[in-house]
Length: 370
Ligand SMILES: [Zn+2]
Image 1 (tube, rainbow, N blue to C red):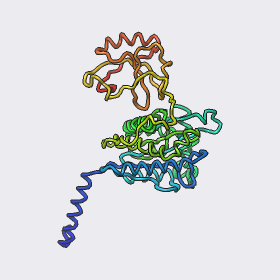
Image 2 (image 1 turned 90 degrees about the vertical axis):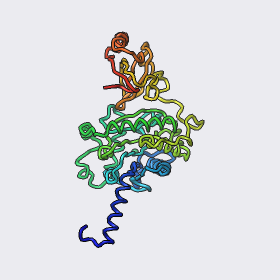
Image 3 (image 1 turned 135 degrees about the vertical axis):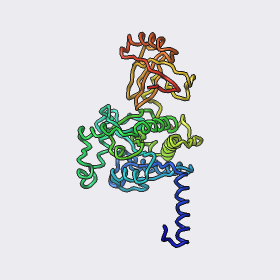
Image 4 (image 1 turned 90 degrees about the horizontal axis):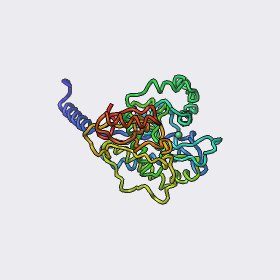
């Protein structure tokens, strides 16, 4: 800088000021990753295919997000092309994303008898699958690797079909897991309320692309293309717009920008999702917003946890059942809030007649206190 001519020095100072200003007004960067593309069609239906739905929803989502100042949108692909899985994560990392959202469409095997009826959205965070069906989804999405040349070397021997390969995902429980789950819950809630999808919940499984992204990251399975009624919705302009709106609301909420919910609402006649796994559940969800006594510490009796919402028949005879969601799990409590631990313990004794594992948790500001 000492040797710079005066004019160059002036320009240099201006550039430094501009750089500092733009760093101060840092955008929230969201990386949208429409899954599959090019020779990789993803799941295929009768009317359309997964790569097309993923891209259309991704592009619509970008359009909605671009209306917000302070949000920067990066796409891993904006047209029908094949992108390697590791390149998708690399794009996210190069752009220093604050959030990575991989968009996919679900399907089950042709041999599955429930193929035409299965329905619902689920949002996945990275983790070790707890059920065989979660493993199937991860296997299917990871198998894209096999279409890449020399994949064994590029992915350090990771084999999408081998159970052992998935251990890396458990060991690398990344530091962004809490944030990933928190966004997953927002996205899942929006896909149900704004896009009318049946609720299959927030789940965890070993997706390579989430593992390789150094930021909070989720993989969205919008719904099932193998169900003909659902496929019509996924293929329709209305469906694509609603699903994009749902994800835009969740991203804005997560980025602290406030979603624009005016242009879409649930309960539309054309929604095909009329039943959900949770319809027969009488348990009500507790959230921070519903907490009637926001500051005081109370005690609750927790008696069961599950990675999916349970029907009310699972806890017949248990009083006042509510659930909260944590770590991708549904956790059920009974009896509401107790002011003292002793009162909660008295109630816990009754619950233990049916659920011997029932225990007391501390509750404050609409969440469990650890
Ligand atoms: Zn997919």
